[in-house]
Image (cartoon, rainbow, N blue to C red; front, side, top):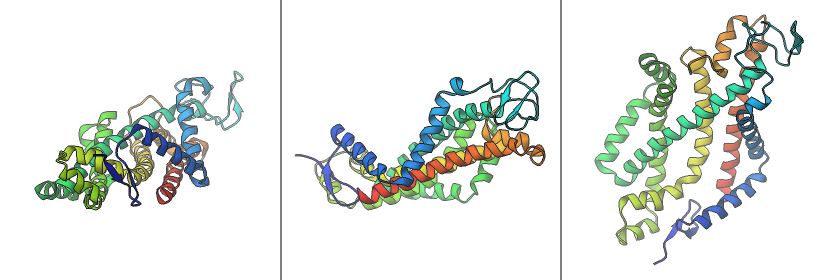
Amino acid sequence: MKKNNENLSGKIVPASSVGLAFKRAVKSFALLKESRIGMAGLFLVVLWILIAIFAPLIAPYDPLANFQPFLKPGMVDSKGNLFLLGTDQIGRDMLSRLIFGARRVLIFAPLATFSAYLVGIVMGLLAGYRGGWWDIVLTRVGDVILSFPPIVLYIVIIGVVGATAINIVAAIILASGPGIMRIVRGLVLDIRTREYIAAAETRGESDLFIMLVEILPNARGPLIVDACLRLGFVTITIGILAFLGLGLPPPEPDWGGMVNEARVFALAFPHMTLFPCIAISSLVLGFNLLADGLREISLRD
């Protein structure tokens, strides 16, 4: 018997197929090209990804090298070195640190976000499809975690276990997983009432097969949009933690850490805090605009 899936708009489409997935990806990109907002977001995100990848080639100086401190944008030091964005309090080139700082953000923000999604999806599928005590236990655990303000939860966890990359990712997973679980659970409760789920159950398919093959692919639209928004939120979170002194360990450049180090010089040398803030804002804006474009696609598709 040929299996069929129904997407969120109610259309019947063939079940898991590599060819179909490729066609849908091409169609989605074509629809995204029609969205100016989505393309603007994609441009910003891809721009920062390329900057992070080619950082050693495009950075004018070593981000840890010391030159003349407190140079303003466009100034030249005594040796004739030009600093387009100036230098910080110990003479490090701001432009090079911004470029290399993109690497940290674009490694740890997606890593933490997608790890949180893995946990949240598993919890949401079990709570929504299995129901019963699975739903009760997972929902109550999620409610307890969500009752804490996220930033307080981050500070407590990282303050206790220490500010390492693994601990920061683990804290974000713990704080974000329950929220993702709620979204997945709501989608599963809706999708499980569809006819193709009943057909799969009648055929004797396993719960694992139904959750991963029949339910999860049909929930991908809202989850992809939420993932883009959550990437922006996690980017801000990493910056806030670094500003509070709980971020990724030095000496490698980190945008939030750059703002923290320069905050006492902000009035006299505003470029030291301004440029890292612009970098964070532009990347978060890119994720948010891309999410808006993907939301338009989900409504058209």
